[in-house]
Image (cartoon, rainbow, N blue to C red; front, side, top):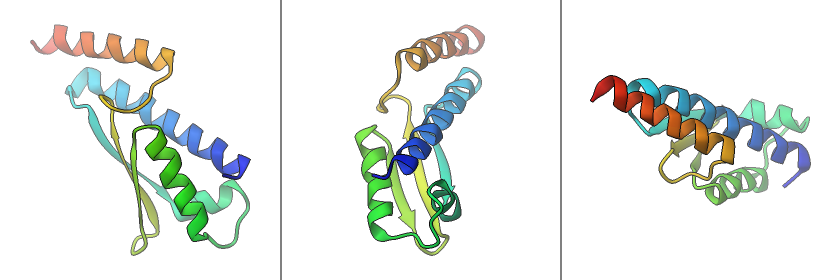
Length: 109
């Protein structure tokens, strides 16, 4: 995976996880869906065309992190399904998730 694409995938995933953690404190839901446009992926490494190998690299990266990613050719987006119960978290994200889940329990149970 090209370093620019890896950096973009890592930043995107970190943002998705951080937002999901914030949302779980209010909703209690642990599964969220996001998209990354093909244009965003192309812009990450100044590409004019998105090759299948690049799409496969993204799908593989997200799979390695416990996140489902599937390219939707009709809409030219990468569909991301993030489950906070099964995705790979950093220590900071794990701490934030614990606090968010505790907040939900206190306020809703």
